[in-house]
Every structure is written in C-alpha cells, then in structure tokens.
Image 1 (cartoon, helix red, strand yellow):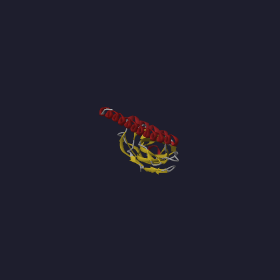
Image 2 (image 1 turned 45 degrees about the horizontal axis):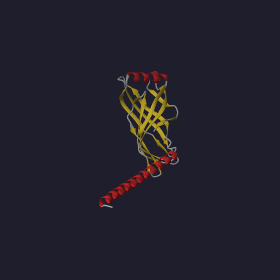
Image 3 (image 1 turned 180 degrees about the horizontal axis):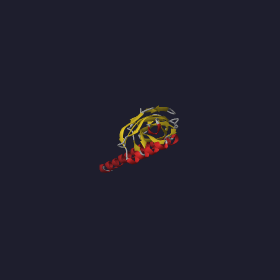
Image 4 (image 1 turned 90 degrees about the vertical axis):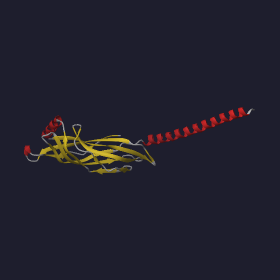
Length: 208
C-alpha cells in the first residue's frame, strides 16, 4: 500500500471517530433533556395561589380637574401549593386599577424563595397622587359611589423561577388580578366624603 493510500485511510478513520464522538455527545444531551422533561412532567408545577384578604381605603378623592388621589392599604397572601417544587419570586410589583386604568403607583413587594406549601403575606400601601383620569372614568366613579358599591382591581406583575431539587428554571412572567369589592357610604350625609368598607376576601386569578 502506498503512503498516499495510508494517509487517506487514516483521514477516514479520524472522521469516523469524530462522528462517533459527536453522536455520543448529542445522545448524552438528548438523554439529559429527556430526563429533565420527564421530571418536569411528573412534578408539573402548580401556579401559586393568591388571596386578597383585606383592603383599607384611607383616601379616594376625585378633584374637579379630573384627577384622582388615593391611599390604599391591602393585605394579600401567596401560597405555594406544590409539594416538591419551590418558587423564587425575583420581582413583584403591585398597584390598583379602576375601569382598566392604573390609579396608583407600583409598590415593590419583598422577593425571595417560597418553599413547598409555604405562605407569604404582604400588607403594602398603594398611593396615587393627582393621577389624571378621563371624563368617562370620573363619571363612572361618581355613579359607583352613588350606587354604594365600588369595584377596583389589585394587580400584581413580576417574574418567578421554579426550583426542583438543585435545578432552577428560567424566568417566567406572573400576572395576578384580585377583585376588591368595596361598599360606599357617606360620613356626613349626602355631601360628606365617602367611606369605603371591604366586603370579603377574594381569590385572585393567576397567569404564569
């Protein structure tokens, strides 16, 4: 056999070896991903449960220039219903909405790890100072106050990660919506400033 034939044979042998190494590497990656997928499907994380426990309205005033000032304290809880999956809350911002318009600034909630079946409770203040509102929204607010019932929504948006054993997932967006039903009554007759009373605890909808 000539030296040329030996070189050609050696080159083909190296190419076959490289292909086998590459195929073995890809097979290992596929197996790892398959194991992660099986674990994920078996455990299948359940979305956290949020509950609006209380809403206290200290200020909710509509000025003549169609601007709304509000000072609201809420108490909201979050429970991790999973037995084997933890949750990292990396960001949580809470604010109030009325008629699909944000009426307070966003307040950041404490973040961190929530273990299996653990419960977190937060009681932040939501404040809006002279927030401009449309004429339509101002009219709806007056009508609701006169009717004696006001519905606002407490919204929470942020990002979380799942933790399974030592494995931690990538980031997922979380959006929470909690209806707050408030009865309305005047403190000093028909011309007085309205007082608001929270009706009942409400379950929040959660999208992850």
